[in-house]
Image 1 (cartoon, helix red, strand yellow):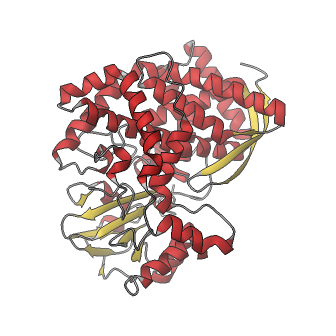
Image 2 (cartoon, helix red, strand yellow):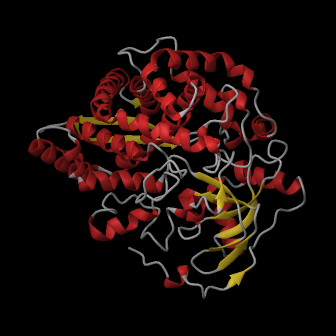
Image 3 (spheres, one colour):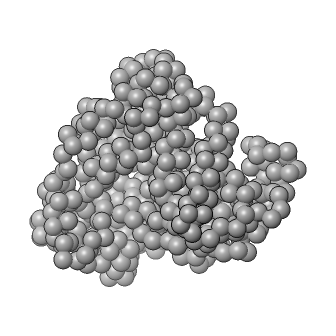
Length: 479
């Protein structure tokens, strides 16, 4: 483990002006947008500015910029020490910053500002967050058995694809599995309305998140793509019909979940719009990047790690008599692999917050004064691959979080809008499904290695997240 410089938390760090600039009005933001999406790409955009300024804290513009964002100017915090200021809601305001410097129309969510866009200081936030935590607590006993059922269906579909085509596209099959799981989880019925499906969520998500993505098209259409996706919001009416079908389906099949809202003083209508967002944006949308990243990194790690995981999983399951929460808790390597996947490719890479007060933020080497009203931006993959914290940060190390030294590193895993060592509460902005995400990731690995010994994948990039294709799959020779 790399040791963090003792000066990183010291008041003796030199107070320096924040380096960087925003360029000319409009033109500076436009240039930074083109650099970010097309000229440099996401990672090089940040690497080049860190090198130029010799600092992991600097000024820049973040997309989408004009004309979608009224103010694209941010202060970037790109190391493990400065990044956590974004978790401190006494210092930063989280109002309407889920997607960054722009705020999608509330027409995408039935006219409601849903919980994800609320700051904890707003009256509705505590009620809605408490409601989510209560619903998840009541569904706790369903998590593992329901997910195992959905995974069984997923593996059957993967094997069918492998038999027919000698390869299997994981993303589309995983998306269907995730959709099935989250809709069944919140449903009172054994079967969910067949008129809704994952493509409805995909379209709805795309129309909201298009300003943050590029489609990877040939260079000669970059300016056209930039104009269409990043200059003006895509109109919500084009997905209104799909959204209404999703809303009506959730309203019909989630009766007991909506009943629970009344205990918190939330109307059924508002609760249902928030439930659709929780299931469709937070849960399903997050799973679209979470599970492919997990399978990609484990697949690329190779047969040695596969053998170690299979040995641990099968030994513990046999000793415990099944896939139980107690058994899952004993799988130290499996847990470490999940944390490592969340570290190296977090499902949500961006965090934003607007400074509520004047403050001083520290990097490893310096202190910087941030003024009230400044927008602070964190690109999480840089913070969680900080070489001053993690040895070989760009390398997937399955055993990274095993043992006492490994456990000490967990506080630098930030994927949930909080530290891995913290828990979501009604008063903070940490993901309410944080523990569920870790649990489902562990169960996916357990179910996989109970069935298979090893596998190979081909990995690629998508507008958001990674693409994964199974190229080979070896069934378990022992259990």
